[in-house]
Image 1 (cartoon, rainbow, N blue to C red):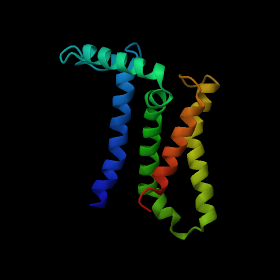
Image 2 (cartoon, helix red, strand yellow):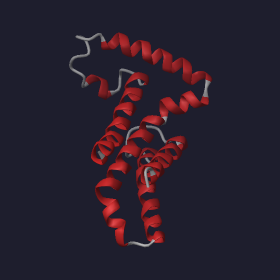
Image 3 (cartoon, rainbow, N blue to C red):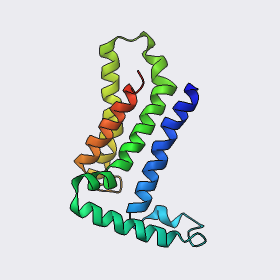
Length: 149
């Protein structure tokens, strides 16, 4: 039962992040070109409809804008951190004191939440640096470390 829960808590955020990202980003991005069956199922129409809704929502609301632009990365961060925790950290933390565990947690959160944005800031990775991405991914990574403890 625990294994099924772990699988769900790892895969559902990835799928949800993809759906948000796919629905709200322009079709000109490379990921969209990789979908070979998009014409067969009318994906262009679905995408255009969803993207128009996302664009309208993000103009009028900080919450919607955060959901559209920062939530996918936060969901990916949650999934990665939850996987690392269940696969490696729970065992590794067994003999460590609380302050050492906290230090490791903070380093991992910094790596997962800040490093991608920093690489975008210095133009090594594609994308735009955004503080909200760091905050949401950091919060998601923190939640993944402490959910179900």
